[in-house]
Length: 136
Image (cartoon, rainbow, N blue to C red; front, top):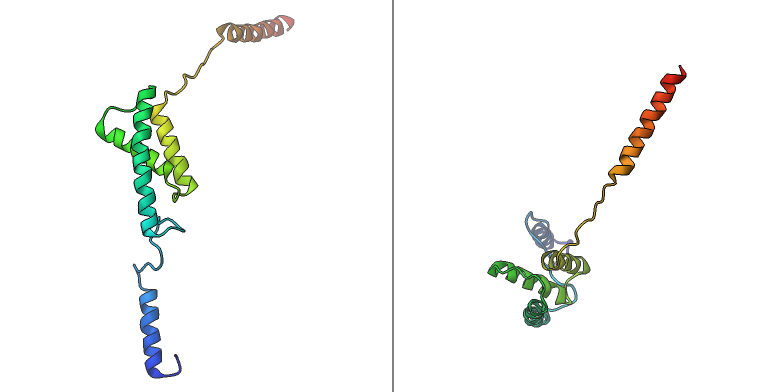
């Protein structure tokens, strides 16, 4: 191909297109590896239907689903992401974390301050200081 002038020009055209700024070859970023477009669309439609059922079931069971329309939709999308096989594990875990944060109440952190122990510690220090001063 590069032996003739015509072949070299054609080769240059191809390589210029390939390495031009802004040109992305191959799959678009974020596309699901190993699935065709039709397979992915079928999978996504099934996951979307399951997500609506799951959120409705969660609401019946007493989970705190936000009442705002967009918040509910966001929870459904997160569940849909969790149910889609084509998504990578990182995205599924992120969606799961989101669902858990917004639907389950967080446990209250129990912080018990034992004032008596702190007072004992301070009085022990003062006693040590007082004994040191009396010894002098």
